[in-house]
Length: 474
Image 1 (cartoon, helix red, strand yellow):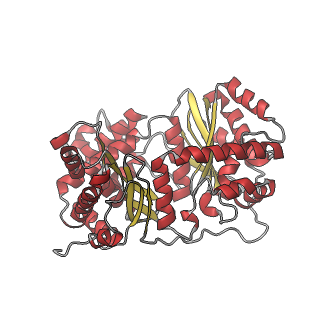
Image 2 (spheres, helix red, strand yellow; image 1 turned 120 degrees about the vertical axis):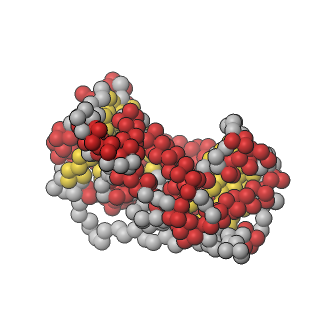
Image 3 (tube, helix red, strand yellow; image 1 turned 30 degrees about the vertical axis):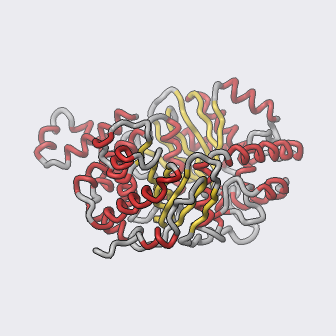
């Protein structure tokens, strides 16, 4: 897979140099160029009668990853049932009407397969990694899990304790804590401001009826994608989907649930704890949704800011200005820019870890870089960021599981999988002016959301940070 996508990258780059190259390729390389431009192997998509979609990429590998991507996550919850989607993920492997938990575990282990699941703010995913010949069994198990979970009272009580312990573990991961606080302040009063795990009081009270109601409300055929990658045959997958998921309902008892708009609020939350050695801080502005045409330029801008930590070499040779300053001056221990997208909104910003006395200097340098993005970013910087973004994009698709995940996520976000050559052309088309334009639109003179945990006494006041979101000299 990696070799194929790198060939695609090089071929398209060469094609952009002129038509003479195509003439030279005609005799010996024309078939390979055509295949690359057609993104072989293609992503095939078929919709069943009940609305469920099957999407797959057949690479002919000896292994495969298959999974069910469901358009349901914590964003579809309210204050009363926040945490139920994640609770359901835990209950999925605790037995069904035809399999006990022991039977399920033995069946998966005897295949040499791996069964897993995760919940995000907008999606719930159940997937399996297995040998190609075991794909039919894996699909049957996944189908059984989402349609016939037993939801026994004893299992619910056991998983309640497991989730409460998981919540304690998450609280020790300060990066996750900061990002939960960032969502809570940026989207306060809306479902996106809720945590995925939910509050403790909800976990202690969620019962079988809550879990069943969530399944009956959200696990509908048109909101599910059966994605597969590796050694899979698309026509066989469609038949298996018909057999195992063809009877999945797509009707609602009442009105179908609507995705409520989640307004962004420029604000901050600070959890000062001087017992911690380092300050953990995230600053973000409102970004755009998955389908917005500004998303690719924002991805380039995000890559341009980059990421860095003290274990990396480079120093004065770092291409990222912020990384170079951090390496030379010891501004921080690490930083990473992020571009988190949802259906209709997003968070674009930076997360960093620094010594308590460096908070102010780090924020100053971050905002200086943001203002450079808005005003004087150069073509050379943007070209470097575009190349890095394409490299990262291709490296992330190394293996059947990342490809399967990419298929499932894009089918829910875009209702199709964007071919690699199309995405590369979109990235290549971004200019320095495009980056300046989107930076002016989303960053310049915008109210940021800030979340800070640890010894943050030296973090500048919110009004000072807000006043540095523009340059008077522009």
